[in-house]
Image (cartoon, rainbow over all chains, first blue to last red; front, side):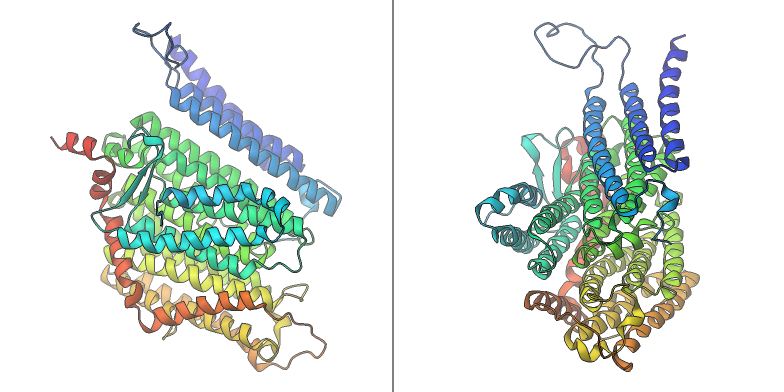
Length: 120
Length: 500
């Protein structure tokens, strides 16, 4: 049962990432592509948090309540990484949306197949 | 003089956030202060390069935490060489661009903020000893690169930047996945400790995370087929930024790729280097063939830049000491020569709306200095003596011959011919065609002329007397090849424990 639960957490995270990738690859609307990018980020963050979870662990903070006692803590590093990844994802999304605004002003559309001045 | 590797990252970051305040004080400060900071970093590089030696790297602990726990900056002969190259080049790109005429004050302010962030991020990628910290710096670099690509509102910059951003977002997720797989198996993020614990990681996990790293960093290093962003970004970004993409951004990307595949994974005997070699070969052949049919000058230079990155990958993919030496030599040459070409081309196509090569008829008479410098760069990049490009190409050919890879050697020579064809086509237009009467040209300002001439002097100087830098390159190559030394210098305690 526990095994199933663990796998279902990883599976959910990977499913969320897949949804994000699907949106990025198939959607024609620029805003939807940015949303897909955001979903992909969230899925990854979920995966990383799940990797760092230890069964029955508490928050990794040293306080008088846990000092000297035999307490299991979850791994703090993935949480720190996810915090950083969230901030970076936020920055990338903001830049992406501002580029969408710029593209809309220039081409008067947010359909990706109507914007193709540049080619390979 | 305070010389500490931490300043490479702290000073440009601090300046970037100081620029809006400086603008309130006195407007010209916005242009001058970044230059002073970059000049300081350039001088500091020279000082630090003299202090650093094969057995005495400069290692800085951040916030006083020792190596496997805290983040550290590692300035060795190899990483220091690349960091110095980036900081000195950044200074000359600033010198080229500090007098903006066409651009309004607000935009100029943004330009300097983003340029400082790009420099700080790239040097951070090179110096950091922590894999997650490297990811953060890669993101700083790419974010500022997206914004700089979309700098001119009139061009199609936003479109190029959006493409770049989508590819970059994929790359950052892959990089993070690779990092988290490594973390799950080793429980550390320090690059030296990762390298030490790598033997206990199962082969499958190793291969998967190596491929994730390879693809993610290959995007930054302009590896085919992940380099779709490059021609658009190079052609839409401002001229000096295109130069810094070639000289700064791509150099940081290839450094990270090399560091990861040599030091951390060390998959040389299991096909890791062969992968690098084959991808480099494909990148080179495809890019140079596409470059030949480009009509836009900047796009042609961008494809040529990718071709050079392919050459660098081939050199490092050989896996021998001569190969590393040749790769570093090409990195140096590509940074200097391609920057010169991009800087000169920015003036050549200044008023032509479509930036086409066919618009350049007879510019040799209209813009004598710029055309001469462009011609010099073109001669150097195709590898004609007595320019510096000749020596790097020669050392690569010798290295491939030593590894008995005749096919690779023949391909490099064949591709060099293609390179000569398309560069000389431009030179033929510049010098052997009659100029259109009504054409308007833009004379370069004194500061950009000085900056281009200094780069040209470096090219000729190294070409006539390669001993100027061969010593540095040999040290750097030896440093990269010495993986055990890298681990020992950063985490001596843990290293000696495993030996006992």
